[in-house]
Length: 301
Image (cartoon, rainbow, N blue to C red; front, side, top):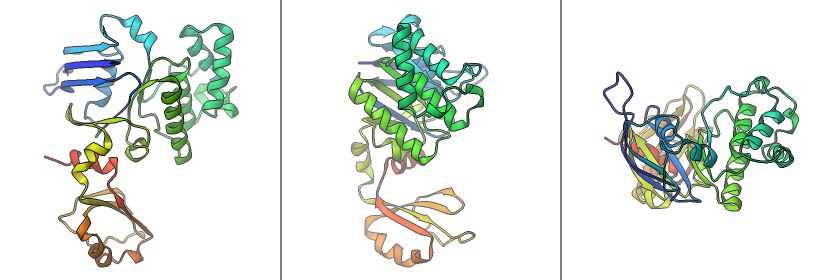
């Protein structure tokens, strides 16, 4: 096992509700594990405890059999952590930041220089390699953070929202690179994400968090069996048009003109006719996704 977590609890000062509430979880070496949950579910608090940046109130975390709080040097040499945001390297150029990340992880100067060039190519940072980190766009900052997290190929990568601020092309590239690292290097990858549909392409198991606890953990296909009798209907509407949607069908508005419905399979043909979807900008009907599974649990009582 890469990680073994038992009955983990974190209560912040002056708060009565725990941010992580009796969490138990095992992650196998070489596994890609995704965590889904709404804001305030406890996702970031959990991973910060796992990388030894936050002390737990109670419970136990072991990394390859060693206590995380009791072995801080082992944790830092084993786990690469990418937070949601980082300002620590803003005074360095892109190429300098990646070089020092690799060198500080034990690579010789020559190997660190080679790793720097490889990461710049992998994460498509060539056009900004000589640019100060502080002058990058949000998406470029994100790719640099990923380069820093993967430089040196530590056994474990913990990534908090790795595709934030990225356009669809770069988001797809991120998932492809992470899949490649997992396949070629056996990297154990743990990530938090809101890109549930895209993450489904690489994840081995997923955990859905709510109010500090996991509501469900398992393989996406296994968990989605709960939704086998439902389909996902996503509709893009002309500006200002709000159709009369069936009140008994769970719906999620992704924007003012984009709504997702969970539709019973046997009602799908009639619903398509009733809503006159030919008048919409676009619509798609397909099997339930990991995002639908997340919404199912997030909206459950």
